[in-house]
Length: 474
Image (cartoon, rainbow, N blue to C red):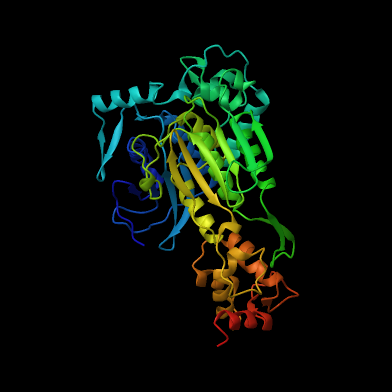
């Protein structure tokens, strides 16, 4: 693959050109996204980049110290054209305008140009006006202080997971201000939502209501319920736990480790992403809660507020720039590893549901709320042509026949996965391969050496009978 510079790509032969790269990152930040590659020359040929932990640390430090407000791009190493390159990818920039050495840039084609005075003033207005970023509003009247234990926990997560530099000797207020949790020297709503005590006293509707109903609507008997009035991190954790305890699960044996693992009827990661998005992107000005409702056929997550200006349901399913309603709060959840930048998470949910054999998530705007719907397994129509495949794995049925036919001759795990066109190894093993081995539809060619590099899978006699039945006995 040969790269070319564009409105979202900047190529640098080495980190010796870091200064120009930082200018481009600033420009990308003011136009929402972009990637800088180190180790690729202007012609698009990979020349390679020496990369060490120190290299990554130095680049991270320069980005954090020379661009204002702070940016938190993703940084990782890739192999391109047989060479090692360093990739610095910016997926969201919620605090426009951004300045590099006192100047604000934007990306136009392959060039970086100055923002006009009007553009800077417009960005500043949108950033500071509570109608745009209510989460940055000063929490007047709040006197509960900061939960120090939760702040220390957060800084540990952000440092380990997102390379956030942490100065243990810095005063607490200085740390909070750098995180965007102070406005004009006072704690704002984001700070209260993340690290406050008795949050409902200040924000009465900023919590999550959960209920599990019998049947397919809210007229059914309530089987379980919970009101989660904690900080935003615990809201996500506890709402996720509520869903997991109220949906079906099965135990299966991992074909590689032979350990029993839990498989939920809906992808665990899709549940977490949907809940986290609802908490992160809700409109906190609306006197309503995030609602999680479980029915026999689906899970619904209701988030107060329609889509932000500029975002539509159609754009939501495509690659799109981040449009953040609660920029500071979303940044906290991103740094703690609860969300990726908006766009990535939506695509991931679609992939996880599809690879489970379930319909992609449904999205709709309902009055003043945005609703995400995750279908449960029993709501999916399953063909009756393969009764030998157990009901606890019905979502695998469309792929079962393809695997059985492909493995008439022994095949490696990665070749089977590629044959099905699936990208996620973990979900492939848990939802297709492991159940088929457990049900003796597939057998291991080297059963006494589970982790052998020569391990293959072959269709058993039982599997051949399933395949024969599925094609009408031919």
